[in-house]
Image (tube, rainbow, N blue to C red; front, top):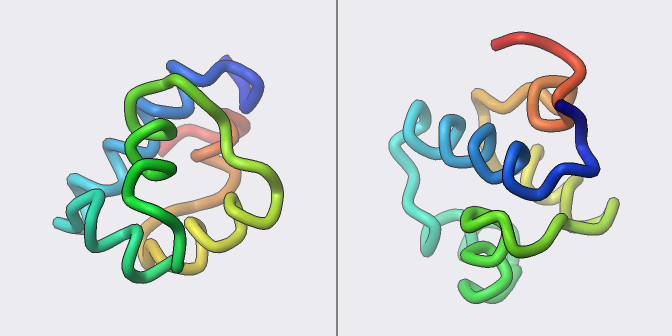
Length: 74
């Protein structure tokens, strides 16, 4: 699996949210993204662009960008 698979990205993103105990709404508030955008990423409907991916990584203290991209194990 790698970054171009929206469903796999969603699984990894949801794992990071769960581990950080952060809701989708809280992530939206932290990133400045719309809650609907975060929901699309969490449900595997879309992948974030580089700017939004960076915001997500910066807003999740436990997220390793390599893990989110599917390049590293947890």
